[in-house]
Image (tube, rainbow, N blue to C red; front, side, top):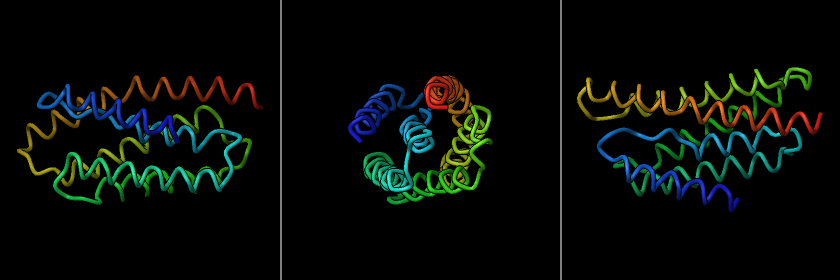
Length: 155
């Protein structure tokens, strides 16, 4: 959980630096997702990570947005949904490809819901959304590579 706190603080710092330019991708969410979908992660640990995503989202809401609880609900819900789908996937299907698709889906769902609730002009909103998703690509590639390294050792 200390790692999640550090990632949250780094994400907050990067968002502060890029304020007015773009929204940063939610690396905190992707880190929680990565930790939740690791081969050795138990259901109890996944539940703790869902709550960590919720609390991290709530703190993010109180820090940045005018709608407290939205990011918390989205973050906790997305991680919970991903964990549910991961548990329903047969062990043979829990591959790098599945993890990557899950990561892309979570990032798009998370950002898409935020996109729907943004209250800024549409051109600016669309530019912010596209830049955020383009910035998420290296993060997803990194977490997929990390998952490949870790899952290769365990299975």
